[in-house]
Image 1: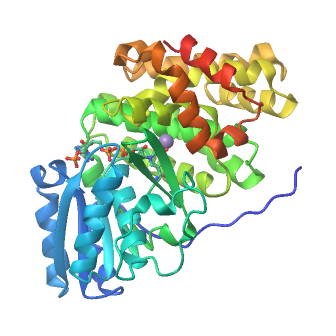
Image 2: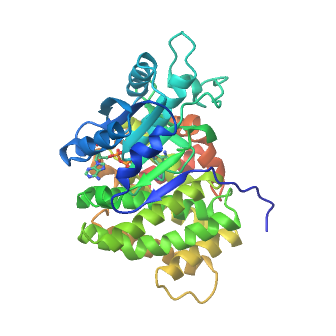
Length: 398
Ligand code: NZQ
Ligand code: MN
């Protein structure tokens, strides 16, 4: 066993049907004025935005609403939100929605917390710049209310943002942005339509399988990952077929949380490293569908070149997926790809990059973007990867 370091940030998770109603009591612990960060329509259309505001006001909080977040949120969206938080003197930032809203809330908390009278941008804190500004305890407290089961953002120390100008999509990383409180209300999550359920659900599967084989994995995250894979295989197809299957929704939310915890000390690897440039170059491509197009080829690459431990871990995935595994060989490990393909079939997400209009002429630029923004995941891959390997894998995923 390798030596390892393990820790979990203290997110207080409030889980279950109706848990949204605790938001006021929780937010009150952090101050009097909240910035509520959401996407443009879903939470309002479903009536949850109004409820959330009511719960906050009932506890005496003043609420500013910033409802401009889009999928694959940009630097500009973060900076505009931060300006509101600064002008209105907000004490706590509440991210309410999918990963995009929660990530934007976390990033706003960084910018607003470090404001010292001179305009600053979230990009200054990103690893893409030389000498990034350190993220400190000045970061404002964040509360996450997750409406998807996908990114693990409600318990993770990452917040993703896209720089449209440089076409770089990257994770801001700090323990200080981890939500202090995380509300997982199944009534909200159950409103996801089938296509969103499948894309976000596959993101969970990608986190689990990648963190399992990652060079940064440890025996504790391995437990989360193996259990999570079992939950996703059983419950994602059910949640996809019937969004009102609450048992399936609950178990997907647990799997999302386990994956988020795995992400804290382990790391995703090649599929994530390759998926971010896809969305940076083609912003209409959602994170989960990019992963769906890339995962199987990356798994084949890792199995073919992987060491004994990597092969054994892919065999474990195959076994959880019901395959008969007689020995830990590369041939047997390839059965894990069948497990993923069968899952993708069941959730109608058997997609290829060409389905999204991705063009080969962008591959060189996408590889550069991967190496500048996703070096962590590339280095965490169990097998060494070169820029030529990544181009080959993009081609095979077309
Ligand atoms: O924008 P609104 O109108 O709110 O609608 C959203 C959006 O259109 C809608 N939606 C969300 N919850 C819903 C719902 N519609 C009906 N019912 C609900 N319950 O769904 C659309 C997609 O939302 P989004 O937040 O973009 O999805 P997701 O949760 O998949 O988040 C994706 C973002 O998170 C990043 C991704 O890269 C992407 O930017 N990630 C964040 C990570 C992290 N912070 O640790 C790790 C991940 O690997 C990932 O990179
Ligand atoms: Mn992801």
